Image (tube, rainbow, N blue to C red):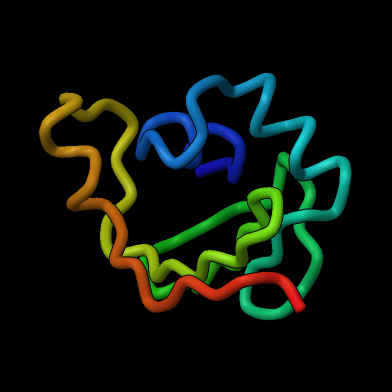
Length: 85
């Protein structure tokens, strides 16, 4: 699944266009590599997202095309949250 679509479906980022913009700014990495919006993600990948002054590391547990709002948080596990130094 494309990274921008995963971010939207999992509700880590609200809109796919916003997810694409964040990727284009280089604020997301997949397994340590700067990611583009079209990069493929799979279960087991580790994402690091920079939201303002915070770094959030998540591990992808499940990849699904459609998911209900209540189940979106089951697609990933938050590994760590830290302030940007």
